[in-house]
Image 1 (cartoon, rainbow, N blue to C red):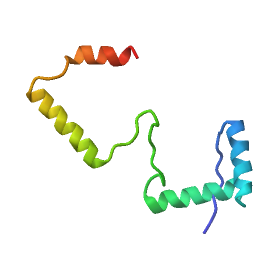
Image 2 (tube, helix red, strand yellow):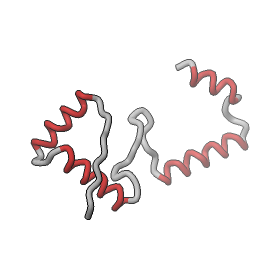
Image 3 (cartoon, one colour):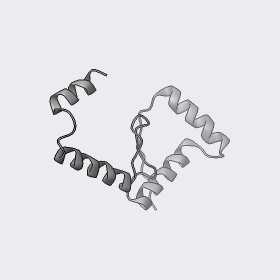
Image 4 (spheres, helix red, strand yellow):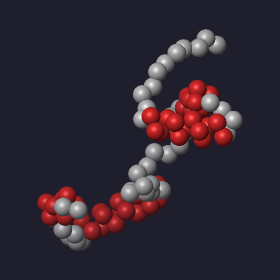
Length: 92
């Protein structure tokens, strides 16, 4: 298969650290990028979950339960007005 040449812009420190780690695994940076690209094609997306550690991912069931509780709170008129809610969030 024909090869193409590309270029990346990375933070120098990150690049150098990645090269050290990859060398200890017996591969170079180009090989690692090729593995990554192959996995993106195979998975039809990123080959890992992209999440914020501040906001851990919820399972489908957990998300459904949260939505259901929210619906119940709305119907029971529990909770606080949205402007008060966003005010509290934005001041943290």
